Amino acid sequence: MLESQQCRKGPFILVEMRPYVGPHLEDHPPLDPNIPDDGLLEVARELMSERLQRQVKALDLLSSSAQTEIGFLHNEDIVWSILEGEAVLLDLETGLFFSLNQVGTLIWERCDGKHTFTEICAALCEAFDVAEEIVHDDLTKLIIYLKQERLIITSSHE
Amino acid sequence: MILLVGALADSLMAYICTCLIAKKADFIPMDARHYPEQLDLTWEREGDNLQGALRYGKREVAITDIRAVYLRQITFPNRAPQVDTAYHGVAFDNGLAWSLTALIDILPILVINRPYAIMSNMSKPYQQRIIAMSGFRTPRTLITTQPGDAAQFYKDCQGRVIYKSVSDQRSIVNRMTSEDLKRLEQVRCCPTQFQECIAGNEVRVHTVGKQVFASEIVTDAVDYRYAWMNDTECRIRGIELPDEIAERCVRLTTDLGLVISGIDLRKTPEGEYYCFEVNPTPGFNYYQAFTGQRIGEALVELLCNETS
Image 1: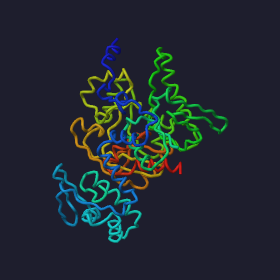
Image 2: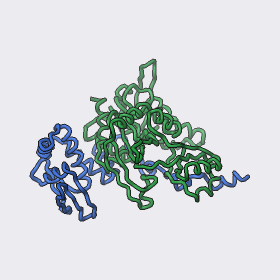
Image 3: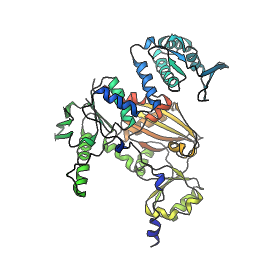
């Protein structure tokens, strides 16, 4: 008797602690199976977060054949200075601070619209005596991050 | 041809479709809700030989032309108007899923991830056993419908206890408090999992084939996924794992029969790694959006390598 009364209160893990996970399919009927790629792309972009869209855009740019031509500029909302060899950035729009290590600072200083991705890559290889493949990958990661956080913009193709 | 199984309403599916279009890959994003009007599946097996066809909309492909599968979610089909009894409804709802999962389980191609391997996440205690065999530490755990046993466990762990669901049913992880002790009778209604609280920082590891992407989550929230509910700050940043731990993560993924995984670790102040769970269908886009890690790209590369 006692047990059945207690069970009326429900499980120990309360219902509000058991959230639904996954897409709300009732709000999104299945797409036409014959939809062309550009239609699919349009729907897909609407469903991705702004943050992820920025990352995809950065990836698109960085994996394009025109990569060598891409340069970067500091976002005009960013104020920055170098403290003990490391860049400290303040985003005036969000109020967020960022700090970059020595390698990041070298990259940041070359996001001046005058250096291309490839030139920054070469400068890093020379400064830190590291293989180009490794530098390329790390540089790509940081550029994606800086673009995601809207700290830099692309100075061509955008 | 790459077969994606899931709904585009899922942002991760949307992301993968976007990447595959950028790579000009041949793929079908298959939403099972189109069954039976726009989706048919027929296949036969004789020894190791599989033959058959998949029709999706106007497109029909031979089973042998499918080179890789990414299984995100089998959506349930829209119920046919003529199906109105409960019995036939269940058969209709599950029929395609049974056929599809059986096929995906035995297709001799790259499958991310096979349904049988995904099943390990349906029972956390079962998965914990495999995790423990891989060399990771696992927290002391009690699963009970007995209020007295739960109270004793709370006492034994000096009140440092969390609770969560036993199955793959999502529950927000909660720290047990003295207030909770007053309503322990409710564990009689549903087996509940209690675990000792492990101090340290959350580390989420995504493995894609042999590649490892680790993120550190810094937050005061008990369950960082829901830190926003209490306005608690949650920061995620990419980190490098010690080689031994990274290798262990890849090995654990393989041991579970998985190709990709999302592994929940906690690094204690003493430098030990506890493992709580391995997610076989990880929503990695959340983490990569914060860290810039190229997890999705690695996954797409893996799928595309099978078709080149």
